[in-house]
Structure formats: structure tokens, C-alpha cells
Length: 280
Image 1 (cartoon, rainbow, N blue to C red):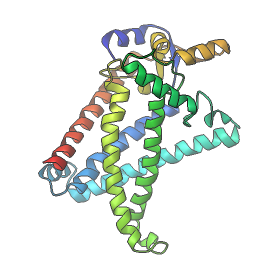
Image 2: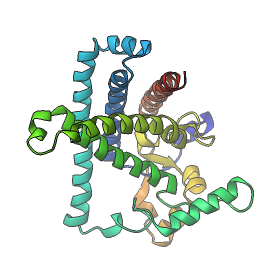
Image 3: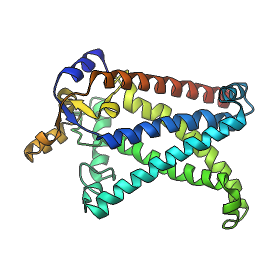
């Protein structure tokens, strides 16, 4: 977030975008993912000099494996908690808006047309689309992580408890689980530390940091510029006041920017190490 935007974010009216549970879950997800990446990739690239040095920072490969499993417990807990929240909304509260509509993460025809419109805008052939609560690239990010957590988590549990799963699965499944776990994890790290970081923080209008996932709030200017369709929809429905929020304490912005900057820096370093190992 630019200095001017950061200043306005502290002094002007905001709209609520993420609740406290969303922010806590994302924080746990972020820290566990970083822990998994920095303890798992040294095992995957154990033949590399940098991998051995990185593993020593955690106390060696055995200690890195233990930390990796602890981080896996946190990430699986986040995934289960997220699923339980969705189930409570869908089955307990009968909230069908999570399946369809502007506040749903389910891909819809409008997302395809917004993608085409956005591509046309990039090359100067049309106006910028008016986005609502979730954009097509945010849905792409979400489902990429959702898919990855199921595949990587499932294969990781098979490898973590081989004696248990050996009673249920044939032996060749473990070889496939080993391959899937490593390759899918490598894909996830590459995606999160490049595409997701660019979408969330490094694109020009957000560089160098978007604090929304830490504060849960966006400014009036951000709402008008980035999600005009949502602003118009809520205003027409007479619900916009439900989302008006005071700014977060200044220390939240400072902590968020600091934590985010460290995460982005570590992620880009990891991408560089991966490219070094793969391309040399």
C-alpha cells in the first residue's frame, strides 16, 4: 500500500471486508505455510548445499521434519475450521449466498466475462470491469489453495502414518503419495510466492503491501475504485451502513505491514532458491 493510501487508511472512514475469524485463520495459514515451505523444501532438495544450510537453521533435517509436522497440524486445523464455518452457514443458517451470488467464492459466468473485460482493458480495448465482493483472481487464488490443502494434506497424512494406511491401501499408493506430496507442494510454493503475492501485494495499485487481511478494512477510496459494483449493490439495498467501520488502530497497520513484508521477502527468497536448484 502506498504512503498516501496508508495515511488515508488510518484517518478516514472504512468498510469492513473480513471479520476477526477470517483474519486469525489467514494469519495461522500464512505462518504455517511459511513453516511448511521452509522445512519441507530442504527435504525435497536435500542434494542442494542451500538446503542443508537451511535445514541446519532448524536444528537439522530431523528437527526440520518435526517442525514440518507441527506446521501441518496448524494448517489442517485451519482447513477443518474453515470447512466447519462453511457448513454452519450452509446447513445451520441456511445461507445459500455462499453457493451463488456476489459474495460467493463459487466461480460464476460473470467471472468469465470480467476476465475477458479485464484482458481487454489491459490492452486498451475497453473500460475496466466493475468488480463486486470477490474478483475472478481472488476466486482463483482461493480454489488453488483449497485444492492444494486437500491434495497435499491428504498425501502428507498417508506418509506421516504409513502403518495405519498400510491396512487400508496397497503399497504402490505410498510411492504415488510421495510424488504427489512433493510436486504439489512445490507447485503450491511457486504459486503462493509469485501469483498470490503479486495479486495481493505487488501489483502497482497495492505495492508494496495491502493491509486488508490484517485490518479487515478497506478505505472509502479503495471501495470506490476497486469494488464499485459492491458499493452500488449495497447502497441500492440500503445495507451499506452495515459495513461502515472505524479505522483499525495504527499499531495494527504497522504490525501488518511488517509481518507482510517479512513474508513476501522470505517467499521471494524461496522462489529464487527453487529456481536456482531447478535451472542450474
